[in-house]
Length: 107
Image (cartoon, rainbow, N blue to C red; front, side):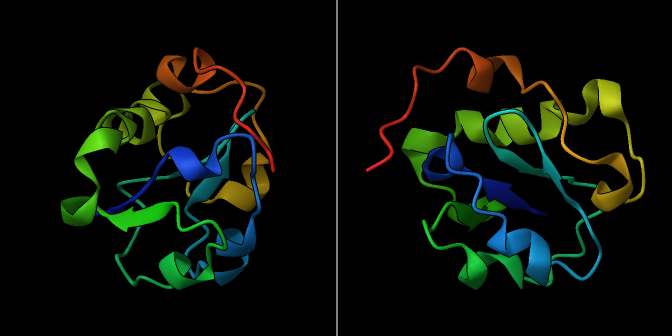
């Protein structure tokens, strides 16, 4: 099991969750953040830190955001498991599902 970042993060990229993650498993894409499913230790520190409530435990992911499960896992298909987001830095790409989304309203 792992945590999943969903739609409220798209085009927000707040990064408060990154600061709370003790294992550095939250990676930055071009439009949103992604939690590495193999590096996450399920501690839950990221979930309450998210100001837009975009992080969900896998089993608690709202049905309307099920596609974000595949987006979170698939983001790492080419990237692999680098062993830490800080050394990788922001990436200039997203999972195709996220890349194809229209711009999100930033109120």
